[in-house]
Image (cartoon, rainbow, N blue to C red):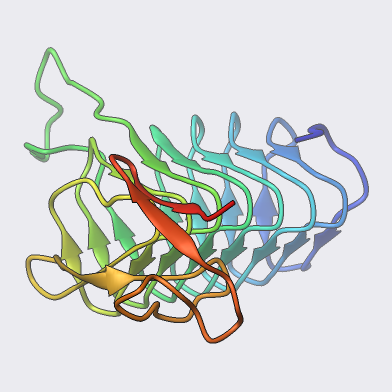
Length: 190
C-alpha cells in the first residue's frame, strides 16, 4: 500500500483531512468524512456518506458502499467489499462518557472478504480471506477463510470460491477452481 497525498478524486462535498493518507486512484464521494490519521490504499471506492476515523486502515482496491463507518482499530485488507450500512463495532461496552481504562478491540477483515449490506461486525474478530457475510447478518465470532455465514447470530452455511460463488459438497466451484479443507478454512487445491 503506497500512501500519502497522491492523485486521488475527492468530491467537492467530501471532507478529507490533509493528514489522512490516501492512495493513488482512490475515489471519495459526497458527504464522506475522512479524519486525520486514517490510511486508505490505492484504487479504492469510498461511496457517499462514509466515515473513516483516524487509526482505521483500508487496503488497496477496497469498496465501501454508502453509509459505512470504519472506526479506529478496524483494518480492511486489500480487495475487501463492504456493503451499504455495514456496522463495525469497536467498543464492546459503550457508554456516552468513555470509561477508563477503555479497551480498543481490533477487528481484521482479510483479503477478498465480502460483507453484505446492513451486516454488523462485533469488535475483536477476524473475518477470513474470501469469506462472505450475508446481508443483515450479525457476526459475533471469527469467520474462517472462504466461509459463508448468515443470520443472527451469523452461522456457517458453506464455503465460497475466490470468485464469490458457493462451492459444492466436493469443494468445487462452477468456475473450475477446486479447494481442500484446512484448520484455517479452505486452501486452493494444488
